[in-house]
Amino acid sequence: MNIQLDDYADEDDDMARIMATTRVVAMVGLSPNEARPSWGVARYLQAMGMRVIPVNAGHAGKTILGEKTYASLADIPTSEHVDMVDIFRRPEAVSDIVDQALQHLPKLRTIWCQLGVRDDRAAEKARGHSITVVQDRCPKIEFARLA
Image 1 (tube, helix red, strand yellow):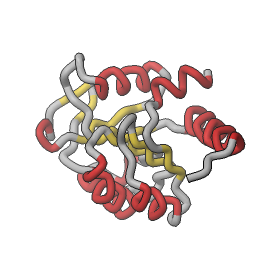
Image 2 (cartoon, one colour):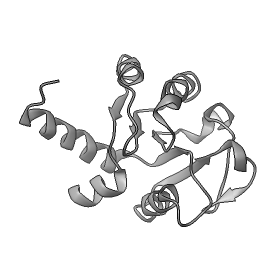
Image 3 (cartoon, one colour):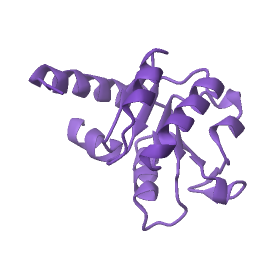
Image 4 (cartoon, one colour):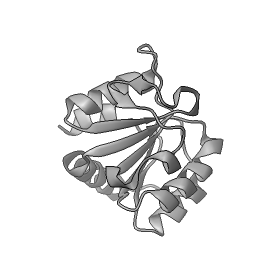
C-alpha cells in the first residue's frame, strides 16, 4: 500500500470531526478492570463529555463506569443513538462486530478499531454504508494530539 502525506491529513480531518461530533460511544470489549487500556480510554472519553456504553458479554447487566453493560451491540436499545463503535477486541472479531453494528445501530457514523486492531474487508464494508472507519489507532491518543 502506498500511503501519501495527504492520506494522513484526511485521516486527521476525520478524527477531528469525530472528536467534535461524537456524543455516544458503544465500546466493545470494555473491561471493568481499571488497569486495562479499555477502561482508561472509556474514562477519557467520558471526561470529554461523551457517553460510553459498555459492551462485554462476560459482564452483561453489570455497571461499568456508571453505565449498564450490554452483551452485544444488538442488545443496545436503538433509542440510545450510538454515534461510534470503539472496538477493543482481536482483529478476528471485527467482521462480526461490524455486521452487528450495521444491522442494529441506525445512527452509527463511525467505527473505530483500537491499536493493533485492523480488518480491511470489514472496514470497506462499513465504508460502503457511509460509515467512517479508523483502524489501528486509539482515540485517547489521537484526540489529545488533535485537541
